[in-house]
Length: 393
Ligand SMILES: Cc1cc2nc3c(=O)[nH]c(=O)nc-3n(C[C@H](O)[C@H](O)[C@H](O)COP(=O)(O)OP(=O)(O)OC[C@H]3O[C@@H](n4cnc5c(N)ncnc54)[C@H](O)[C@@H]3O)c2cc1C
Image (cartoon, rainbow, N blue to C red):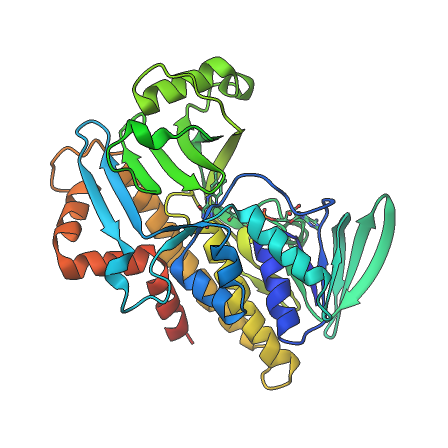
């Protein structure tokens, strides 16, 4: 097996395959796993998968447990609080784990380096491949030299700009949000500017909405920025100061440890399996970060795919089983992850005014009803998406 891409999805998939006894080569074009600040939330069912591989405790020790998430209306201060501890009887891990994604990839890459079924090749970029009925022939660039490898299956876990997806010439339907997203990380204790702030907060406002998340190393702030503003200006001290002024409601000068601008997309590839070439993670689907579903969805792809490859490679199933992987994961992407993230964004852009059609009005009703609130949390924790996945044949 060859897995292209050493992000969270590629490293996790390679680890699952190696643990299933499948010889796996992980290719990563960079010289080590990336350390950028992107995902920082691991949802309860992801932790359960990690636990089955003996990985959960080590990751939990590097993160923060966040059982509570809050929706806030900026103008009025109204707070709707959801506590995953209410689902103690349904979830083995009734909390979100706040932990930087690069800690996860690096932890797995280190384990893979010492794994008897795995080979990790940094500075190895997949540049082309061909397949026939029995094998895949992969071309790789390594420090200016071209190498060739072959394998039974190739998985593109090579991120949003996936070379594997592009070489296959696949459609990647959906849309790109007009605004840019700016994420800032700071060691400054922003919590002291809010009453009773939890580790995960979505603050709603038609123009100045923001997300505040606590990761072990920093508070992370995500805000939308007008697409017409130049990146250099967005990253300037004066612009960043204006963001903190709005978020913290005061002209506080705050030092940052990371500043990053992203374009955000809602897209799903039109098929995740192409003979012996497969896609997983951001190479196959992208969504906005409101809810923390992107990386988790990719990790759920990896788990599902590894189980099916194990069956196929041990000859207890035919290659057609991969069609079920495509059906299951694309249904979850379209019906759950795309739908829910679009809805989450709509809600955070609302003023919270009381009018019947609003997402906030819907949310107040859900919050006020014990059963509905638990159902909602099962959805937002991604548990429900995996129950649905298993029902798809
Ligand atoms: C601001 C922001 C916040 C986010 N927050 C969350 C969150 O809280 N929770 C969540 O679940 N998700 C979140 N996400 C999404 C999450 O970061 C991604 O879904 C996740 O990184 C996808 O992992 P991946 O392994 O598929 O791709 P990537 O992390 O992009 O990794 C791909 C890897 O492939 C390598 N590569 C690329 N091309 C090649 C090649 N040709 N050959 C070999 N290697 C190659 C790259 O160097 C990279 O290391 C967030 C995203 C953003 C932008």
